[in-house]
Amino acid sequence: MVDVNTQFGGFLTTQGAAKKTNCDALGVPWQLTHMRIGDANGADPVPAPGQTQLINQVYRAQLNQLYVSPADPNVLVAELVLPPNVGGWWIRELALEDVDGVFSAVANCAPSYKPLLAQNNGRNQVVRMHIITDGTANIQLKIDPSVVLATRSYVDVIMAGHLAAADPHPQYKTEVATQPEAEAGVNNVKRMTPLRVLQALRSASANATELLRGVLRIGTQAEVEAGELDDVVVTPKKLRQGFSCLLAINGYIALPSWLGGLIANWGYADITTNASGGTTTVTLAHAYPNEHWGAVGNYKNSTRINDSFPVNTFPTSLSTLTVSLDAATGSGTPTGAQQAFYISLGK
Image (tube, rainbow, N blue to C red; front, side):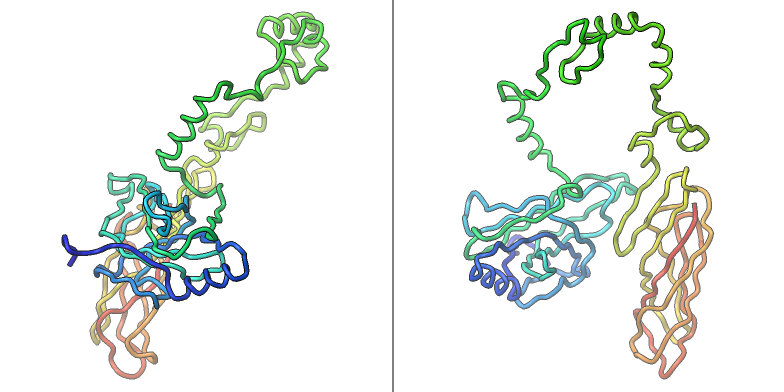
């Protein structure tokens, strides 16, 4: 049990140390890309150099930052930001993965529960993993900046530097166009004042109606969802309105209403069985606002390799699903913990 005497931290795995040594010898950078998070099945994990996977992984995502600790040049700090729509599990064990998928570092941490928005306690959570190594000069962070989140402190530092600059926007310094240049409309470098724009429109009053007729407006959310107009434009925010997803072991995808509002849930159901099978009710990752049509299931594992359980699934509410395993077929009578995979649909 975790108490005041428990020590937390991490180190390179045997595989990770070998990969770093090889990269150092070849003179090529070692690129760390992802962090893995696990709940250790509720236990207090003790990391070991020989590990090749977490005890029970619940999440994996690209790193946000990778930097050398300002307090110790031999300690590497990896950072991951968890958004509010990710969670529903405990954080007890961490690992790093390199660009080739090598399980490179492992650590334990103080248990922390990451809530979901559906629990009325959603939040951004920063997870930092401290790794002891013999050198950090040849280690690099490789990320896709389009899929990572910035921490508040990172944004504050960037904004402070931007605001302290003598001229933070030199690219927007342009000359004011003369009235003849505004009316000619051939200069795309100089800017026009509102007065000169108005004067240019007045001087071309014969064509002003045609000019204004070609300006498209932004459609409302209701117009976007109705999908009937062909003379308005759609912003990315309105296009994505109503879409959400949780790409995890137990997750969901919810389409916006203009795509039918379809919602798909999936996950694993843990079932305790006896000779007659067993039944459990699972809470879906995303509740259905209107209808829960049904689900299908597939048997995943057994205590005997030749045994299997027929799987039955049926909705019990807009947010729950009952999964049952009938009596086992095959040799023997396996009992105890079994598992079935399910997919549920609704809107």
